[in-house]
Image (tube, each protein chain N blue to C red):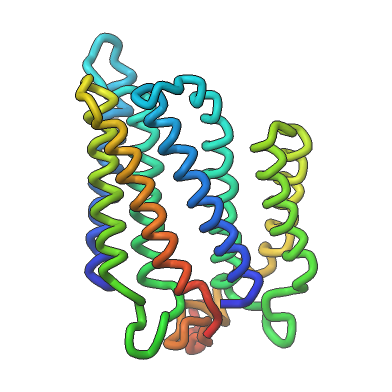
Length: 145
Length: 126
């Protein structure tokens, strides 16, 4: 797993832990005598959807999509670092009430990820998870070329 | 595919099917049904989370040569706690059983933290 995916998946796991805590408090709000905690539902949804699931998908896709031939591999690292930073900043901004600014950052992150990932969506070359937990070169099959 | 992954995916598929039935019933006015948050969490917790945790346990890099998938007891605990917590939620949101929503919250919170702790050790390079 490349280091960028490691950071992205770890950040997703942190959001997951935070999102689960907010979700548990929201679910138990009435028996615990704090119905006002229901106001956290949008933040809980944002954390779970964008911070956890979308970010996990970004990190795993960066790791597991077929690599570019030659030295390009997974593409330039800097734009993907920016994608991860923008996504996390966007989620944090939305959670703390700056919804418009947060959504702009999240949209930029999604667009950046799509642009960076598009050239790697192809049939032949690299794929699957190898014995050492990373990608392996597939045997050349004529129908995939 | 390890056993805990197989059971996670099977549970996820079953809960997805339940969610689809609940979703269809919601279109019928007057029919008894689960509340909307139950439907939403059948999909996000019951289907998506079971699938994600199961596949991550199977596909993420090996923890070590001797224990490639880390401590499998944590994965089993996460699977059991998550689904027990979801079941409590379905009961607690439909019937006024005292304490069951708090139990559901605790079980699901524990489940997610156990899964996150277990998978954290597998998020690494070669």
